[in-house]
Image (tube, rainbow, N blue to C red; front, side):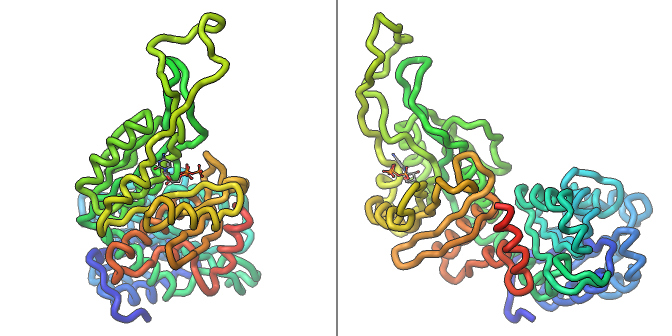
Length: 428
Ligand code: CTP
């Protein structure tokens, strides 16, 4: 068991759904309690066929949440959702994952999960064919893309007699993931982080501009992750079609010069910056104040001047603050990222190969390598929400080295969960 783990937020809502692995929820509960967590349990009716609610009542000294209408609390599902610092669904059946993916709320467990605004961890356990069914795979992907962490399932012999992927992950692994996520939810508390995202538009005239294909998804995911880690976040965003992430202050800008001004302004009170924007390197030397007319005015060539480099500018005067940049490359990815790190003078570069099918502009997944002055850490293809979490977790570690980099162990479970990694790779 994990010794010496501590986390400031420790209230865990444990959702037990119906499967033979339900009995392992008792061990998970004990593991969390041994590490200082206060646990409350909600069960589906099917789960009560495997383990009696009295067991959990005795272990937690709390009433088990079973029914939205028959409870000593007037609104039990909201009470539980608001109380929890984290929700853990273990074991999670294919059915509860489908309900979560589609927002169905038809019993105590699914209704409370829909009301949860805290981080959610799901530990699936089911028959291999149910896990491999495209419907379950799609639901798992949907949940991951919304920032839900999946731990497992593992591969091995299953209770139904089949062998394959579908086994509940090891108890220790589920407990570690929960503790790590609890800790992560406050490891940037009190910190102000500035993030840039999206493209910039460089005006040629009032209706034409130069730009690039950046969707802004990565920067927005990083902003969301930083807020989830407890940071105050200022997101300086170029023109994108994305909703503002919850709890994030967005400053909308259009051009590189506007992005520079807003970033420098926000960075004055910040502890760190993560610059994910695809800033246009050049702008037209002259911006016409009227729509240029074909034939009357020369549109066959446009004189360009270089834009300011925001990353290099803020890295220069950063002092002991941390600055992280990105490098979207098409060849010699690591070599170019190292050169960029030195040229821009920042602390870390998130390098990605945009020629890979899973890492193009606009995709929902990314394969990145974190390149530091003395380090290089390669990650497999992951949903952007998970990549963002890895970057933000690394930032927390860089700001306070005693904070361990933990989230990678959540998103890339070890041991039995190699199957999950392989499965992730094959879907990416
Ligand atoms: N960047 C910036 N300001 C610029 C250009 C880039 O802040 N004017 C930042 C990006 O947000 C990113 C990093 O610098 O974090 C690298 O961006 P990239 O476009 O890959 O590098 P460039 O400096 O433009 O170099 P090149 O296009 O030659 O690869």
